[in-house]
Length: 163
Image 1 (cartoon, rainbow, N blue to C red):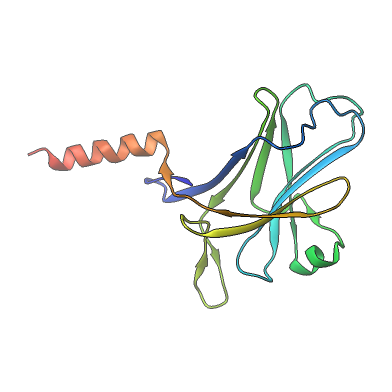
Image 2 (cartoon, rainbow, N blue to C red; image 1 turned 90 degrees about the horizontal axis):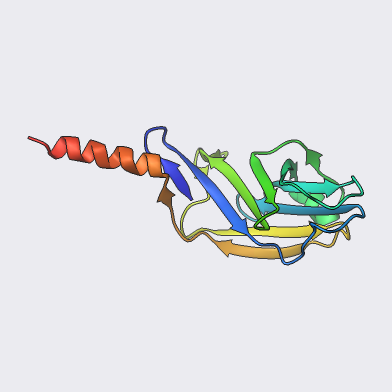
């Protein structure tokens, strides 16, 4: 997590090196990552990439976003492409995937908010062209401010301490 004190926005960010290297593959290749936003039974949001070019990846690529209901997840009946708040990039050198989401909070029926905050367990899955979903769970370890926000906060503090 990182945020900006001035705009009151914060971001969920996940970066990792995938276990499967799809860069040299020339056949149709796909990867999907999704997160359950909320509690058990709520909808899923994530990012995907499908290489249909027949060529190996030679540059970083943006990933598309998608959503699915929990019913679609359990039945395997499909997704809604180009929907959802997650964004992603597959970087070539070094090979890594970055996935992020601006977090203002998801409102619920009772007026409370669901957020990706430090200490929260988040359920997700990974899938490829085999369409086998491999579940994972992460615990968000904490938050950090962006460098600009941290500098802004430090300057504000210094100004208030000046007599």
